[in-house]
Length: 124
Image 1: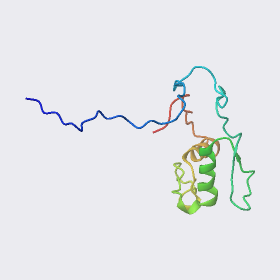
Image 2: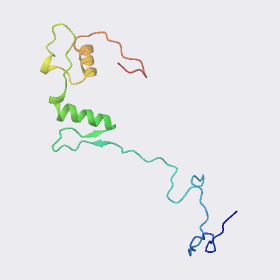
Image 3: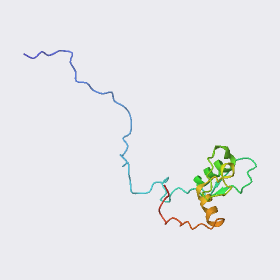
């Protein structure tokens, strides 16, 4: 036995006055006015913004600029690298700010035969 209500009407959403728009694909292979196939250019160089910086302040990579700021402008935060050659005075406060510079020192000053790393390999 089905009961029917006399006041029952099927729901009709309110009518809105709008113009239907054509559906645009999200990923189109056709260029749009704001699309450029060229990659976004990276800066030509990075500049040190410390006031009265004595260097030229032009660095090719952001990592180089970060290293410059740490070594030149915040040297007290560095752990110095001591020369590994016996009897060398380059230890403690006279140590090197970077290991690669200490290795260069050992090659040039102490004539140590330290092989250069092969391309594509990083030191541990």
